[in-house]
Length: 439
Ligand code: UGA
Image 1 (cartoon, helix red, strand yellow):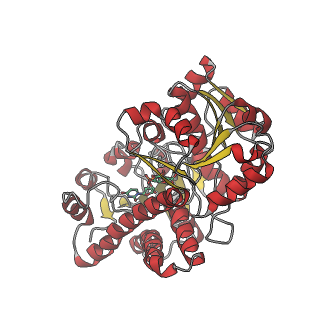
Image 2: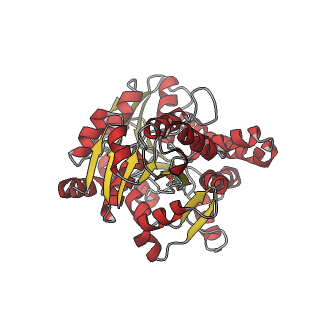
Image 3: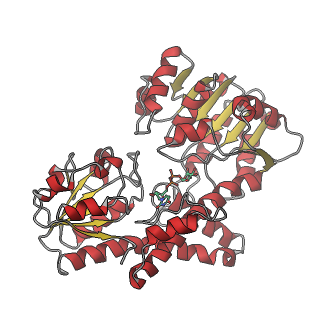
């Protein structure tokens, strides 16, 4: 099939590469010409494991190309995926849909023959009819353009696996007899044939699938982190507790790792966007508890700051603190709403000299937080530090020898915000270890 992917960020670039991997002829479109140039040379503008290889392979084979032209994209095929960003509104809690509507409108003006426009971007429920209205108004092919809602559930750091082998496919249409369904089933034929549950539904249910899933995932994380607060006061161990709870198949272990909480460009934004939309629909009571989910998540960050102050006797002025981690989670260079970086920034505001290290996210971090110090190597980063904070659980950090490290610091105290360090090994090497969620 010939298909396009409009918007080549984390979602779109991965989707384009994976569709080429499935054997389709793919044209990725992004209005950022630098991004188009980089992608055309087979490289991603961000770090995602395996993506550069896939891009290099399929741009070389000619099955994957990129353009900055809406006209070229519109003429290329009969299926257009839209994966542009829908960030949180500046100064608000709803979604900023301007990129989405602008992309739909620009594409529409060039659509002269029947086509399916399948939107993957995360949106508030009720967006699909507005997108369809724009297409009806601006597309020369008018009524012959079908709108499909196809939410994307990929996680950064395993985006390729999640795209090629998703847990489920959701296809939303506005009528039961939709030829758009046949087009999408053909596109995903290999994934469907592998037994992937495929749910065909209406627009609103498809839109809500994504917001509900992310809000549930956030709730699960905040639940275990609320339990962590109790554990810290009651003298219990939240990590063992999470394991005990997780053996109950109704609860499960995945997505319930206690620690510094969730960040990134999705969970925090979708939680707030879901609450805002429920409010607009007059059912804000339904999600009153999501406000707590958000608050618990923020409190984890404050807790680490409090622990750091306690360890250093209260006053942080002139104290040296090293933070391991800038990315919002391991295996990505994404620093959007990163808990690690938020804590680093707060400690800096309180007067500490903060040095941050991260295997992949230092360049991105430097751009948004130039006031912090950055060092590439996790061992060199602790030189002369009074305190070490382990805030993003990169496997690289777990492999550092705590004995070698202890010789470089001014004070051998570590706060493990993720609970993944080998506490016995660190204590044997002379470190005082404090784990978030343990007394
Ligand atoms: C999330 C969802 O998991 C995806 O299904 C969804 O498609 C995506 O948002 C999106 O909306 O595009 P992502 O943000 O990439 O994916 O990452 P997650 O693996 O869900 O982690 C989110 C945050 O929660 C990270 O900061 C992570 O450290 C934290 N987390 C995750 C925990 O604190 N504990 C856990 O058990 C799991």
